[in-house]
Image 1 (cartoon, helix red, strand yellow):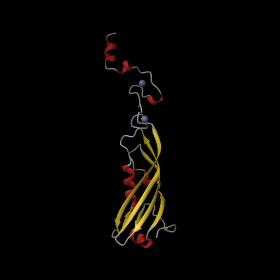
Image 2 (tube, helix red, strand yellow):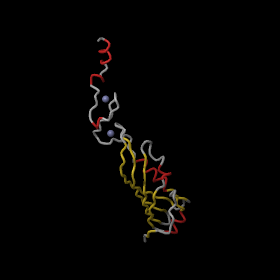
Image 3 (tube, protein in one colour):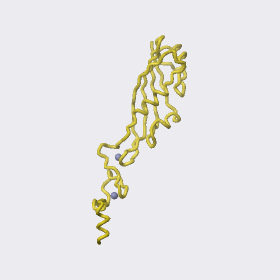
Image 4 (cartoon, rainbow, N blue to C red):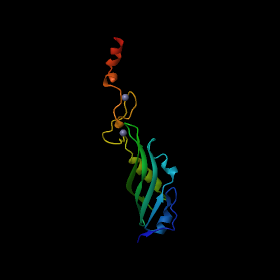
Length: 162
Ligand SMILES: [Zn+2]
Ligand SMILES: [Zn+2]
Protein backbone atom coordinates (compact mmCIF):
# COMPACT_ATOMS: atom_id res chain seq x y z
CA UNK A 1 0.00 0.00 0.00
CA UNK A 2 1.32 3.43 -0.90
CA UNK A 3 0.26 6.46 1.04
CA UNK A 4 1.03 10.14 0.79
CA UNK A 5 2.68 10.87 4.06
CA UNK A 6 1.64 14.41 4.89
CA UNK A 7 2.34 14.08 8.62
CA UNK A 8 5.87 12.86 8.01
CA UNK A 9 8.25 15.80 8.10
CA UNK A 10 10.61 15.47 5.17
CA UNK A 11 14.09 16.34 6.47
CA UNK A 12 15.38 19.53 4.81
CA UNK A 13 18.75 17.88 4.14
CA UNK A 14 17.01 14.71 2.79
CA UNK A 15 18.84 12.51 5.29
CA UNK A 16 16.18 10.01 6.28
CA UNK A 17 16.45 7.79 9.34
CA UNK A 18 16.10 4.21 8.18
CA UNK A 19 13.95 3.20 11.16
CA UNK A 20 11.49 6.01 10.29
CA UNK A 21 11.24 4.66 6.74
CA UNK A 22 10.68 1.10 7.92
CA UNK A 23 7.98 2.31 10.31
CA UNK A 24 6.26 4.26 7.52
CA UNK A 25 6.39 1.53 4.88
CA UNK A 26 5.84 2.55 1.26
CA UNK A 27 5.15 6.22 0.81
CA UNK A 28 5.62 9.20 -1.50
CA UNK A 29 6.70 12.68 -0.59
CA UNK A 30 7.85 15.89 -2.23
CA UNK A 31 10.34 18.50 -1.10
CA UNK A 32 11.55 21.85 -2.32
CA UNK A 33 15.34 21.99 -2.07
CA UNK A 34 16.57 24.98 -0.08
CA UNK A 35 18.91 27.35 -1.93
CA UNK A 36 21.82 26.45 0.36
CA UNK A 37 21.91 22.92 -1.10
CA UNK A 38 21.90 24.14 -4.72
CA UNK A 39 24.77 26.59 -4.49
CA UNK A 40 27.74 24.38 -5.31
CA UNK A 41 26.13 21.70 -7.49
CA UNK A 42 27.14 23.12 -10.87
CA UNK A 43 30.39 24.83 -11.89
CA UNK A 44 29.90 28.61 -11.80
CA UNK A 45 28.63 30.55 -13.72
CA UNK A 46 26.19 27.67 -14.26
CA UNK A 47 23.73 27.47 -11.42
CA UNK A 48 20.64 25.58 -10.31
CA UNK A 49 18.04 28.22 -9.52
CA UNK A 50 15.41 25.98 -7.98
CA UNK A 51 14.70 22.28 -7.65
CA UNK A 52 11.79 20.22 -6.49
CA UNK A 53 12.16 16.55 -5.58
CA UNK A 54 9.48 13.86 -5.71
CA UNK A 55 10.38 10.67 -3.86
CA UNK A 56 8.74 7.25 -3.79
CA UNK A 57 9.96 4.80 -1.14
CA UNK A 58 9.42 1.04 -1.45
CA UNK A 59 10.38 -0.72 1.74
CA UNK A 60 11.17 -4.44 2.14
CA UNK A 61 12.77 -6.05 5.21
CA UNK A 62 16.12 -6.18 3.36
CA UNK A 63 16.27 -2.96 1.41
CA UNK A 64 14.65 0.32 0.54
CA UNK A 65 14.19 1.36 -3.06
CA UNK A 66 14.01 5.11 -3.62
CA UNK A 67 12.78 6.42 -6.95
CA UNK A 68 13.11 10.12 -7.40
CA UNK A 69 12.29 12.84 -9.87
CA UNK A 70 14.03 16.19 -9.72
CA UNK A 71 12.68 19.12 -11.69
CA UNK A 72 13.50 22.78 -11.61
CA UNK A 73 15.29 25.60 -13.37
CA UNK A 74 18.92 26.31 -14.02
CA UNK A 75 20.99 29.18 -15.40
CA UNK A 76 23.60 28.14 -17.91
CA UNK A 77 26.08 30.20 -19.89
CA UNK A 78 26.79 29.67 -23.59
CA UNK A 79 30.43 28.64 -24.08
CA UNK A 80 30.67 30.75 -27.26
CA UNK A 81 28.73 33.99 -26.73
CA UNK A 82 28.62 33.92 -22.87
CA UNK A 83 24.88 34.65 -22.93
CA UNK A 84 23.01 33.35 -19.86
CA UNK A 85 20.05 31.13 -20.58
CA UNK A 86 17.49 29.96 -18.03
CA UNK A 87 16.10 26.52 -18.81
CA UNK A 88 13.82 23.96 -17.22
CA UNK A 89 15.20 20.55 -16.42
CA UNK A 90 13.84 17.22 -15.22
CA UNK A 91 15.87 14.19 -14.18
CA UNK A 92 15.07 10.92 -12.48
CA UNK A 93 17.05 8.43 -10.45
CA UNK A 94 16.58 5.14 -8.64
CA UNK A 95 18.74 3.92 -5.79
CA UNK A 96 18.55 0.93 -3.46
CA UNK A 97 19.75 1.13 0.14
CA UNK A 98 20.23 -1.63 2.65
CA UNK A 99 18.01 -1.40 5.71
CA UNK A 100 21.21 -1.94 7.71
CA UNK A 101 22.27 1.65 7.00
CA UNK A 102 21.28 3.95 9.82
CA UNK A 103 20.79 7.02 7.61
CA UNK A 104 19.67 7.14 4.01
CA UNK A 105 21.23 10.19 2.45
CA UNK A 106 19.04 11.15 -0.52
CA UNK A 107 20.69 14.57 -0.82
CA UNK A 108 23.88 12.89 -1.96
CA UNK A 109 22.21 11.11 -4.88
CA UNK A 110 20.13 14.20 -5.71
CA UNK A 111 23.25 16.38 -5.97
CA UNK A 112 25.07 13.72 -7.98
CA UNK A 113 22.16 13.42 -10.40
CA UNK A 114 22.07 17.20 -10.83
CA UNK A 115 25.83 17.48 -11.34
CA UNK A 116 25.80 14.77 -14.02
CA UNK A 117 23.28 16.72 -16.08
CA UNK A 118 25.72 19.58 -16.58
CA UNK A 119 26.94 19.88 -20.14
CA UNK A 120 30.63 20.70 -20.28
CA UNK A 121 30.17 22.98 -23.27
CA UNK A 122 26.65 24.34 -23.31
CA UNK A 123 25.66 26.27 -26.46
CA UNK A 124 22.65 28.64 -26.51
CA UNK A 125 21.92 27.22 -30.00
CA UNK A 126 23.82 24.73 -32.16
CA UNK A 127 24.94 27.42 -34.63
CA UNK A 128 25.80 30.13 -32.10
CA UNK A 129 28.17 32.57 -33.83
CA UNK A 130 29.94 33.56 -30.62
CA UNK A 131 31.75 36.82 -29.90
CA UNK A 132 34.08 38.73 -32.24
CA UNK A 133 37.65 38.10 -31.08
CA UNK A 134 38.52 41.75 -31.89
CA UNK A 135 35.67 43.88 -30.53
CA UNK A 136 33.75 41.39 -28.39
CA UNK A 137 30.43 41.99 -30.11
CA UNK A 138 27.84 39.18 -29.90
CA UNK A 139 27.75 38.11 -33.57
CA UNK A 140 24.30 36.51 -33.13
CA UNK A 141 22.96 40.08 -33.01
CA UNK A 142 24.56 40.97 -36.36
CA UNK A 143 28.00 41.49 -37.92
CA UNK A 144 30.49 43.92 -36.40
CA UNK A 145 32.70 46.43 -38.20
CA UNK A 146 35.90 44.45 -37.92
CA UNK A 147 36.92 43.45 -41.44
CA UNK A 148 38.44 40.05 -42.12
CA UNK A 149 41.60 41.93 -43.27
CA UNK A 150 42.14 43.34 -39.80
CA UNK A 151 41.98 39.84 -38.39
CA UNK A 152 44.68 38.46 -40.73
CA UNK A 153 48.24 38.22 -39.40
CA UNK A 154 49.41 40.15 -42.50
CA UNK A 155 47.43 43.21 -41.46
CA UNK A 156 50.23 44.23 -39.09
CA UNK A 157 52.91 43.89 -41.82
CA UNK A 158 50.78 45.84 -44.30
CA UNK A 159 50.68 48.80 -41.92
CA UNK A 160 54.49 48.78 -41.61
CA UNK A 161 55.13 49.12 -45.33
CA UNK A 162 52.69 51.93 -45.93
ZN1 LIG B 1 25.70 31.45 -27.69
ZN1 LIG C 1 34.41 42.82 -34.23
